[in-house]
Image (cartoon, rainbow, N blue to C red):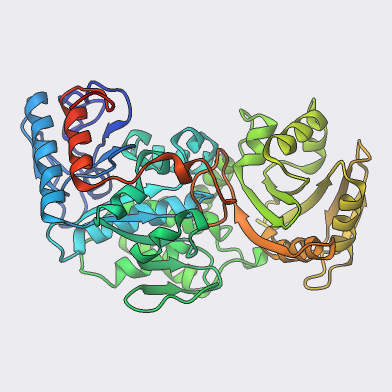
Length: 494
C-alpha cells in the first residue's frame, strides 16, 4: 500500500515551516495521514491537504479536522488561525480522547485508534477529534514499548499531543470540550470540573462509580482496552479499519494478554476473537510470536534508564491520612535490581523527593512459555511500616501470594519470591491498601502516578498543573493563537 507523500501536511519534513516559536505551538502530521494511509476508503493525502491539529499550552484549541492548506508557510498560518476562529465563533466541538496517567501501550493505542475512528465516522461536521497522551512529553521516552511500536508503524512522536501541551480546563471553560476516557473511568479531584465534559468511557477495569446518561459507558472485563476499541471499530461503518491501525491494536492486545497465553491469567475469549479478526482482515500482519517477542523485549529494555526512571516507568501510589506508599513495576530480575550500584541511595532519594514513606517493587519476567515469574521487594527506613507491609503480604489469603524470603543486601529492604505468579500487582494493591488502614490510618485510593505530576485519575491533590493555567475565555484563546501564528511571543502585547 502506498505511503503518503512525506511532504504532505505539516511536520518536520513538510514544505510548511513551523511557527517561529519553538513552544508551545505544535503543528502535527495528521492521524488521518498516519493511521489511514492506504486504508480502505481513505485516499492518500497530497501536498496542500492535511488534517492538522494545533496543541497550544496556553490556548490549546485544535483546528478543524480536514482542511485544504496552501503551500506557502505564511498562508498556511493564516488558514490555521482562520479555522481556529471558526471553531470558537461557531462553538464547534473539540472532542478529546484520553487514556490513563500510566500512559502504557494500551492507553496510548486505545486513544489513538478510537479518536481516528470517531473522526472518520462521526456525523458531527465541525468536530475535531484529538487523542491526548496523559503524560508530559518529557516522560514519553520511559514508555519504551510504546515508542517502539509507534516508530515501527511510522508514527513519529512529533505527531502526538501530550497532557502538558493542551489545556483541557481552558477548553471546557470556553464551552468547547467533549471528553472520552479510555482505559480508565475516574478523574482526579484536580480534574473534577471536567466531569461534566465526559461523554463516553471505554475501560476494562471494574467500575468504581456510575455515570448516568447521556454518558456512554462500556466497561467490560477483558484483558486489554484495545479489545474494546477493536470491537467498536468492527461494529462501525465498513472500510474504516486500515492496516496501520490494525497493527497497533494487534500488537497491543498481544502484549497486554501475554501473547494470549492462558497461563498468564489475563486473556479472555473476546481478546482472542479480536486478534483473530485483525489477522483475518490483514493476513500480512506479522506472526503473533514475533510481534509479542519484539514488544516484550522493548518493554523490558531498561538498559538506558536510571534507577529513578525505572521506578517511575510503571508507578502506582497508595495514600492514607498519614503516609504515601509507592508501588513500582520493575522489568528486570529482582536479584539484578538489588545489585544495581548505588541502589540504596537511589531508593532513599526517590522516596524523599516524592514524599513516599516506603516503596514496594514487583519484578516481573517471563519464561519461554510466557509464564510470569514475580518477586517482591519492600523498602522503608521505617521499621514499623516495613514490618507491617511484609507481614500483610506474607499472611495474605485473598489471594495468597505464597511468599518465600530471599536474601537482601540491606536490612531496610525485604525481598521475596512470589509463588503465586498469577497474582499481579493489581491483585496485590488491595492487600497493601488494607495494610495501610491497619497501620492506623484509613486506606486511601489507588493512584497511578507518572511524575512530574500531571492531572490523572490517581494523582494527589494540589498538583502544580491544578493551578498553572488560568481560565480562558474564547476571545483570549483566539488572540493567543493568533499572536503565536503571526510570530509574536505568547505574552506579548496585543
